Length: 203
Image 1: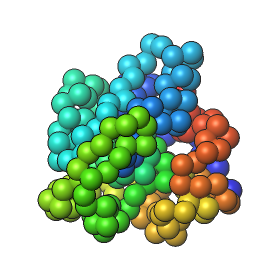
Image 2: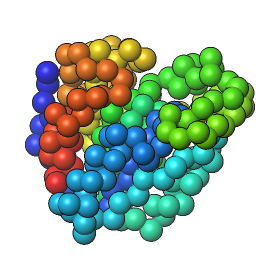
Image 3: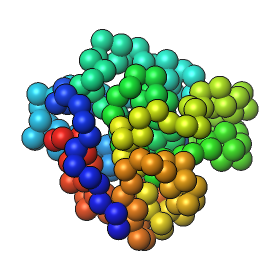
Image 4: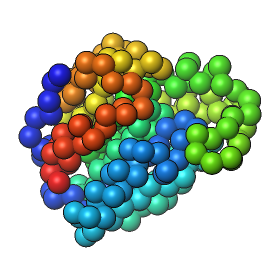
C-alpha cells in the first residue's frame, strides 16, 4: 500500500465539497463519515454534499453554482466513483485540490449499459438515466493531461469489483496515489484510509 505524502501545498482549507457516485447520495457511508468528522473536528470549515441530479451537465452546473463564491485556493473536493470524475472536472476548472475515491475514468463507456430506469442505493427513489447523458459525460471529460497533478490524491483499491485499478492508476499517474491491496469499490474499509485523506487536505 502506498501512503499519501504530506499535505498538498496551498492555503489552509476553509471549504470542502463532497460528490457522491452513480445511484448514490449524501447518505452514503463515506459521505456520512466525512461529514461526521467535519462536524466534530472542523465545524469552522464550510461543508457541501449535494444530491446530484442524473444529468451530468446539470450536476456540474449545480455544483459550480454552489461553490461560485468559494475561495479557490482554500477549497477542496472529494469525489467517489462517478463523483471522482466530477471532482476531476471541478478541480480542473477551479484549480482546487481533489481527493478521488475509486474514481470512474471512462464514465461514458461504463454507464452506457445503464441507460434506463435506475433505483437509488439509498431510499426508494428511482430516476431515468437517458441516452443523451452519455454525450454529456463526453462533453465534460477533463483533459487527458491533468494540470498540476500534485493537487490530486487518488485512493484506489485493487479489489474494486466495478472499476479497473490499473486504469485508475494509469489515469492518475503522476498524482499522489494510495494503492490498496484488496478492499472493494465502496471502500468499506474507508475508516482505515480516512487519516490519509485528511492529511492530504491538511486537516
